[in-house]
Image 1 (cartoon, rainbow, N blue to C red):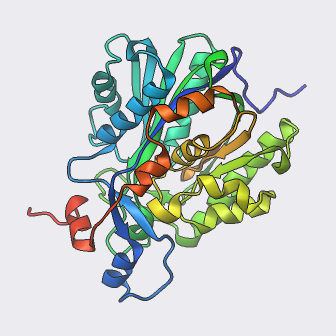
Image 2: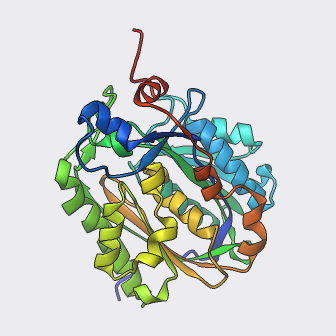
Image 3: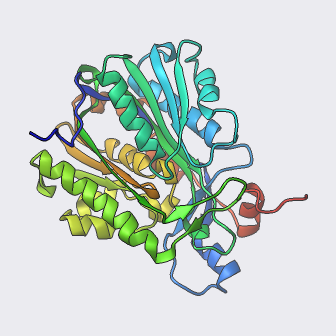
Length: 354
């Protein structure tokens, strides 16, 4: 008999705590269009979140992790892993994870590491943390998806490449606010998006990034996990898909049979842009902020290169007590300061004096 393609931990695992972080600065899409398109053309998002001059993946990960710890109600030194998934780590050689672990008080008896897989680096760390706890190698593990994504000036990514993300503490299911029912990953060598060492900005395959990249991988991952677990879209209260823009997740949701109301609470790209490694994970955090006990949630990430991680989880009564112990995702989104394109260019290092 063929082994199951859906992974279920030997020891039941769930989300003990979660936390999001979104910078307060916002660049309206109209500002990008004004500079590069003369104000013409369709806008893929309303605006995007922009990291400030004193913010990067590390500082934002620290804030999200502190929120996750507040909801988990555990001490930082109880963590046995701190993993940061991103494609915009501040250092080429020096881990983000050790700085985050030190700042939150989790060192020195900790496993730490940085994860990379484009936009699914965060969920890759999430699945690995689930496996670590599920194997009994540690009681709690912290997985983070965070980015300060950038696009080449004038490129389509200028509209959507944003900053932000979320952190999750995985632990025993009996303590969880959401229990992990199963995970599944679907991966191929599909070169839709890449950046070589030494290059400042990524390149992408234009329409190729939709099909056979995004839609193929998310569709296959969602289909296989639902088929093997004998679930249909009607069995879910919420679904969260990677959101490079507003159109893609809506399109793939419709193809899979999900209704607009099932994805609306986790669809954040129109107002904060594409937070890359944090996109699916911050969408899930917004869902957990409003979900009710018993709700089943599907999260499917996408990372160029290419692959998708699918996770099925069920919300527990503990969510009602714990979600109020830290800022909600929507509270971060509502805290906004609008900036013009020149300020954005300075803040993101697109204007240099060298």
